[in-house]
Image (cartoon, rainbow, N blue to C red):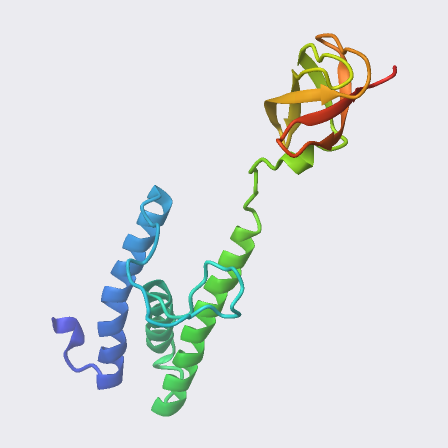
Length: 190
């Protein structure tokens, strides 16, 4: 521990915070890239969301504590020789810690914008074209099946028609949805 001998107390404090926090940060980063980072494992007794909206970002979490301490300690170490006033150094370090948390928030908010909702909703099939898979009897006399692509996913769904029989392989357009989830289709006139 010769490194710390003769060192100013405030600088020692910054180093004693920076070393373990940096190690925890590296471990968190590795776990994130491995996919083993589902959550902090800690939960608070109050709602710590920034704006109450549906967001994965919690103000009070282990990850944000680590981000804050990382910015605080390394800023203090970096500017120790540049800022002789201890109070000003601590204030700048606090601001850097808050900036680290805010930067993390900005990064997470941008990453969540990349998420895509590919859940299938039957209502999204309206006005889409489909191909008849099993012929559809005419005048609501029975049901057939169609193959329809919604959000890049091909689905096989039950279908009926209000017109004449529609043969297999015919292209149809979905005009509505019945209460029991059947698509009401009509033949596309070519």
